[in-house]
Amino acid sequence: MVQGTTSDAGKTTLVAGLCRVFADLHIKVAPFKPQNMALNSAVTPCGGEIGRAQALQAKAARLALDVDFNPILLKPNSDTGAQVIVHGKALKHKTSSNMEASEYQYYKKIAMQAVLSSHQRLTQQYDLVVVEGAGSPAEINLREGDIANMGFAEAVDCPVLIIADIDKGGVFAQLVGTLMLLSQSEQDRVVGFVINRFRGDIKLLESGLTWLEERTNKPVLGVLPYLHGLDISSEDALVTKQAAVEGSSTSEKVRIVVLVYPHMSNHTDFDALRHHEDIDCQFLFAKGSKDESNPEKIAIPPCDLIILPGSKNVRSDLDFLRKRGWHDDIAKHLRYQGKVIGICGGYQMLGELIDDPEGLEGQSGMSRGLGYFAMKTVLKADKTLTNVSGILQLAGKTAEIKGYEIHAGQSTLTVKDTDKETKSTHLLNIQGEGQGVLSGDGQITGCYLHGLFDQPEALQLFMSWLGHDVSKAPSVEALEEQAIERVSTACQTHLDMVKIKKIVTQWYN
Image (tube, rainbow, N blue to C red; front, side, top):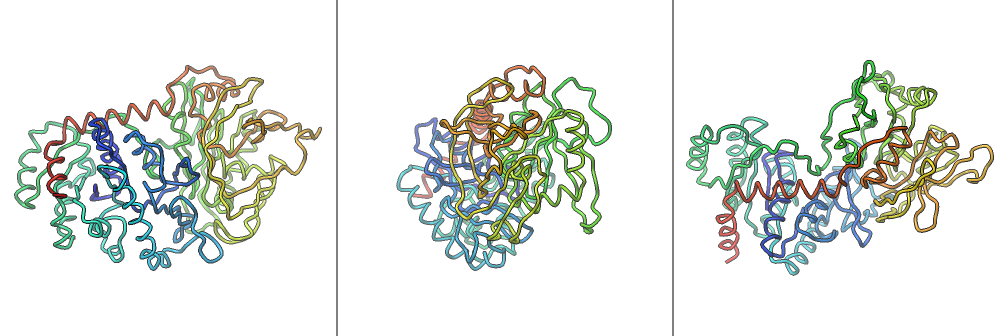
């Protein structure tokens, strides 16, 4: 098991790298994360839902996705509550699948049984399971009933590596402090340390490594270098830059602004845009405010395209958008012939009405949409979870497209597609069925499909719709594969893999 001194210490990356190393040694290896908290998820072949980090790790292990790789997934939809996903499906809890944090503390005993059953199935199918912890094992307030870190490690009796990010500073304090806050039995199962994101002369670090080993009686199993440009799937952190809010860009690149609201989901939808050399894709953040009646307003800067991304609480995020004046900015953007795309929750916002009668994403009730599509959305308890492939139809051209859908909303056009007033058309053709909407004036479109830009041909077609010809870039899948190989090579070069394999063998013998 890989545990970290902090969030974003490199647990996901190290597990992915180890999975690829062992897979290339023809060892049947599987990734596993007992409990994940993330708004970025992927759809398994069986129609389940797991964290995208585990999807990446499965790819590293050269495996199809399986709900057992991430048996408990928590998808926050408020400051204190989350939707609970168990074995890929939303838990039916009281009147909804949402659970407050205080309630979840009592539910952990049941959740642990789901975790252990998944782990048992994996250990029966695979020679090796590489487990990712969550956050830090030294979070004292979360120790009771822990299923994500040492609580799980103790339950299944597995060895633990602790990874720390030296780029954050204070790496020796991180490691020693984390170890000292563990119980004796937990300390005993820590078999070594890994230091991540080191840059500089390793000789300057050696005296510190020697001190650390003598102080803790634990070996340092490797120092991984800072891999510049590595952009591997993260749980929730946006790896990006803030949009410029004054003036317009002088760049000749395609200018795209993605609106960031509090419950934004699946930001990996925009990885292909961020990586493209001809596209300037930026994220616009608006700070929260203690006084939501008069929040800080940051205008949407001039751009070619505004994207409304997915959301885990659409009505709340729509209210957030309005309070910051972004609805007026969108209208102004359209008057100047700009384009708008809504994806999943953002697609719902573009309609006339969003109805959540059961309170699936918060308080029950209805919200008025932005009104650009003659469409009504009703949130229903049974989620749509499916992998999709079809044809993108835009600007008189077509391109093959594939992705996935994860949504509780069921959207219905309130007028027929052939209505002379709207003249709207479908954006996608999925197995002969029209899906998504393209407005009659061709300026606004939206759909439920995540991964719209992941195929190079589809991305080029969207850019052509914006009036730009861009070069063909590698697919997101190809970029992910390159990243996995970089991490695998770093693990083989900078970790003592002989000692790691020996530790695993001795532990279970």
